[in-house]
Image 1 (tube, rainbow, N blue to C red):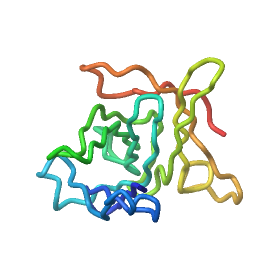
Image 2 (cartoon, helix red, strand yellow):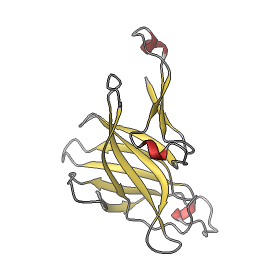
Image 3 (cartoon, one colour):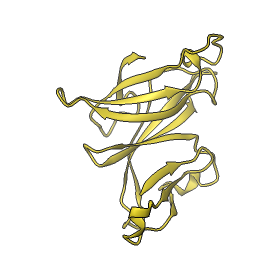
Image 4 (tube, one colour):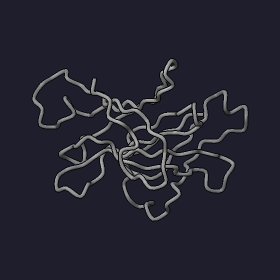
Amino acid sequence: MIFVVFDNTYHIGTICTPFGQSFNCTDQLLAWPDASLATTDSQFEGITYNSINDTYFVAQETIPTEMKEVFRANIFEIRIILTDSTPIRVLESCTINWDFPTDNKGIEGLEFVTHQGSGHSYLLGLCEVNDCDPKSTSNNNGRILVREKKEATKTRKENCFKEIYTI
């Protein structure tokens, strides 16, 4: 089974692979647990699997901040349990500490990796534009934001990921 996200809806698509179809798998849309968001654009741009905790990370390209003309990517950590009546559970939501000046030029994809030796986990976020800056005039300067995953807490809303570096 493959999970996909869409930038215009708060749903996650499940697409059955030929192998999954032999296990009575069916393609479907999974509704986001907050039904009040059903008619708004999600800005979802990527999903990646965390095999350590059996969770997924979903990236929102950007969301507004309290500062005018400053946007940040938001990352949800979710658990998907297809047999539950509410199959998506949001475990954590937090912004990435990187400012974008527009709402449509943020994170465009992501990957989750774990360093086997140290056990540290990292989220790699692909910026949509050169230098992670829509005003950049340079070519071939793509950027990946590298962030280390911090342990979840019930009170933290920001900085779930420690800034490591930019590639």
